[in-house]
Amino acid sequence: MSAARPPEGSHGAVPQPAAWAAGCAPATPAQRSAHTRTLLPALALVALATSGCMTLSPVPTLELVKAAGTAAALAVTQVSPLTASSNVFQPPTGLQALCIEFNPGVSVPDMVTALQAELRRHAVTSRVLEAHSPPQACDVWLRYHASVAWDVRPVEGRLDMYIERLDLLLQDAQGRVLSHSMLDTVDSWLTGKWATTRAKVAPVVKTLLDGQEG
Image 1 (tube, rainbow, N blue to C red):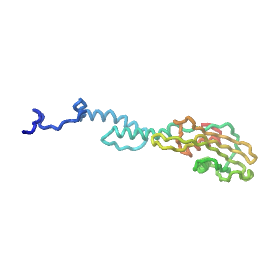
Image 2 (image 1 turned 180 degrees about the vertical axis):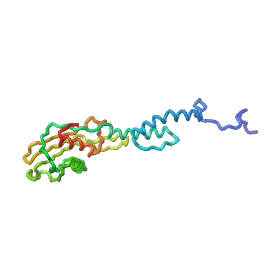
Image 3 (image 1 turned 60 degrees about the horizontal axis):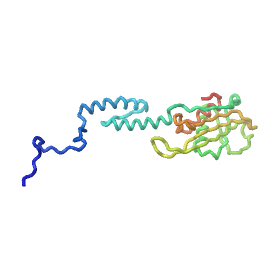
Image 4 (image 1 turned 90 degrees about the horizontal axis):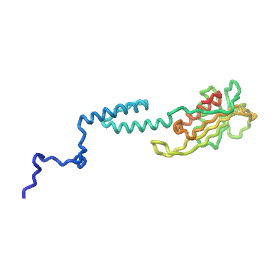
């Protein structure tokens, strides 16, 4: 029996995938070029939004997805500045030094480091003393409290802790309240829920020292 011959005019062509047979023919070079021209402007906008450098691959759709993911991750911590509020402000003039009362109940490991860094930025030196130290050990005391919560980080998809609320209290040796400021990030997904500890501490320290909210 002789082997079956291919249909007239096929010249032995390999059968094409079913999707092509259904009318989904592969894109022509002109169509691929038009597709690229459509995606590249959008990709350029995402690249500018992330303020970084990118290398475009021959598959712009994949690069667009990756860039959009990077932009979304940055947006979680950089959409708008954090602001603090105050309800008491009467600190001593010319404050240059204070003591920070260590709070063992705060589970944020870099809280004290962030507080001292921001105080230095405002030309205020500090030393850390154990909780319940004699009040007369310092003329001015900084006491702090932070509430934390857990949630899943966007994009990364991992469970992590974040500072939900931060309170700072400035008192003299007699316990008189000199200044109070706070930061509340509840319901603030777009205002720095996942910002670093120092980024959250910064506006609260500033408001504590100058009384200016925001």
